[in-house]
Length: 124
Image (cartoon, rainbow, N blue to C red; front, side):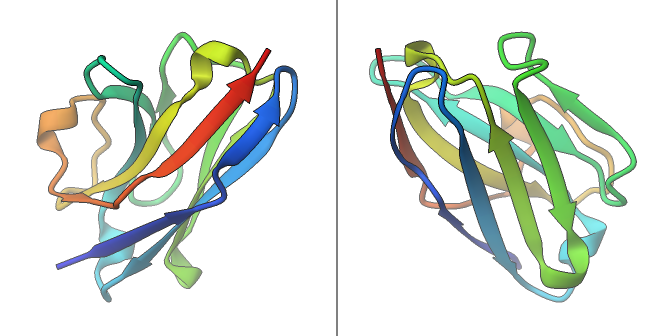
């Protein structure tokens, strides 16, 4: 069992940066692939970025490539999302997720554990 708690969201102007953090509980966190997803009002939850168990493999959505970077520190049970050059369309609730599998996936249905989300609002 893994519990996830996100932090770091907030209000930022377009072009600004934010760093989201996700604190995980559970001794097996280092074995899990983890990812970030987001959901804007009236829209489905969508993939943002994911990282495999070792941190050696990552994937990101085309909409955030070159702007967002996912990383993890398994020794600290932490997951991060560094977001730069933020745009108003990045406004959403951002969720941290983990799956009981070492391989990353962009499929939202294949993640087993979810945080409560943190709001990111980008003003124009």
